[in-house]
Image (tube, rainbow, N blue to C red; front, side, top):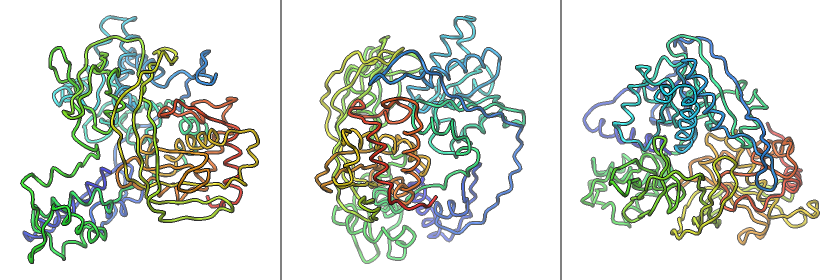
Length: 573
C-alpha cells in the first residue's frame, strides 16, 4: 500500500514539474529488488534503464536457520509447545552482547521487540549489573527524540544489542554491525536480505540467524532451505490503480493545479471512474478549465500514505499525562483495548480506557504475569466475482468482498506457558472492509471422502495453513491478509474458504494467490502432512491471529479436503 501511495506522489510531482517546464530524472536504488526496471517503471510511471552491477563492499556472511526446541508443555488441543522465537532470540542476543558482538535483532511486532530486549536484559543482569544498559528496544511509536538517541547510541557502540521492528530495515544509516538475528520470517525474501545485509556493511565477516516461529511458513522454510537460498527475491507488488489510493491523490493533485483531461492518463485508467464519484461527493467541482478542489482543508491530508487507516491512537500514562507512543488506528482494537497489556521500553502497562473518538488510550504502569490476545468474529460477503476457474467439481474465484469484523473479547495467557487464564468481553464497534479475495468452493458430493471429519473444522484448518503459506507466493506476510471459512456460505451455497487482502480496496496479494493457486495450495497440503503433530499445532494449522481461539480445527479433514480440491488442479509449477 505504501508503494502504491508513493507511485501517486511521484505522478503528482511529475505533473507539477511539467507545469513549470521541468522534467526530473529519477534515480532509484535497492539492494534486493527483483526485475528492478519493471518495478521502477511501475513506481514512477516512466521508462527506466537498469544498472545491475553490485560493487558494494561485503565480507562473508554465515547464515544459520534456527528452529527452537520442543518443550514439555502442552498447548491447545494437547498440541506440543515449541519454545518461542522471541525467547530464543532474547537468549541469543544476550550471548552475543556478552561476547561484545554488536547485534541487531529484528522482531515482527512492537510487543515482540520489547519482549526480546527485556528478556536479554534479564539474562544479562544475572552476569553483570553493567550489561543490561547495553541493550535496548527500537520501534515505530517511539517519540522522535527517543529514536534519534537510540540510533546515536548504536553508532557509538554504547549499545551492543538492539531489538527492533522493521523500522531499522531501511532508511537509517546503521553500519559496523557484526550480527543480525531475524526473529521469525520477515514476510519476503527481499526483507530477509535487507535485514541480513545490515551486518557486515563495513566489509567485515558477519553472522545472520533466522529463528523460526511456531508457524507453518517458518517451519516449512527451515526445512526447505532451497526456498530461501535457491530462489530470487519476489517481484515488487503495488497497485497504483487501487481506487482507495487514487481518490485522495486526485484531490491533492486538483488542489495543487486544476486537473485537466490531459492529466488523467498519468494517473491511470481508474482515474476516469474515480473522478465522477469525487464530483458526486462534493470533493471536486468541474469547470471548463478542469476539476477543482472544493474544500477548505488541505487535500494532501486525505492521503493516508502509510495505509494506517486513520489518525494514530496516542498511548498516554493516565497518572502523569506522559505520551508513551502511538498505535495505528487499524490495530488499536486488538492492541490497546480496555485491559490490554502494553509494553514500552521494557516496561509493562495495562490499558485502563480506550477512547476511540479522541484517539487516546489511557494506561497505567503494572507488572502482570500474563499477556492479552484479542478475539474477534468475522463475516464476509461476495460483492463481485471478477474471475473464476473450474478444477473439476471445485471452483476457484477472485473478486471483491466486504469483510465485517468485530473484536468481542480478549484472553489472558500466562507469560511462561501460554496457558489461558481467562477471557473477558469487550464492547467495540464493528469495522467494515471492502477488499479483494481469492476463494475456493467444493460441493457436498465432493466432501464424502471426509468421513467423520468436521467439514467446518477441516475448512478452518485449511484456511489457517493456506494463509500461512501465501507469503511464499505473494509479496506479503500473514498479517497483511485474513481469512474466513465455512461449511456452507450463503453466497456460494457450498463449503467455501476465503483469503482476503487486509487493506481497503485490495493490495494485490489475493490476486497473486489466485494466479498461483495450484502450487500455493499444494505447498499448504505438504506443510500439514509433513508436520509431526497428531491433531494440529502452531507449525501447521493453528494460527496466532485466529479470532475463534483455534476452534474447531481438523487436521486429517483438512488433508482430505485439500486432496479433493487439488484432484483436478493444473500441474503448473
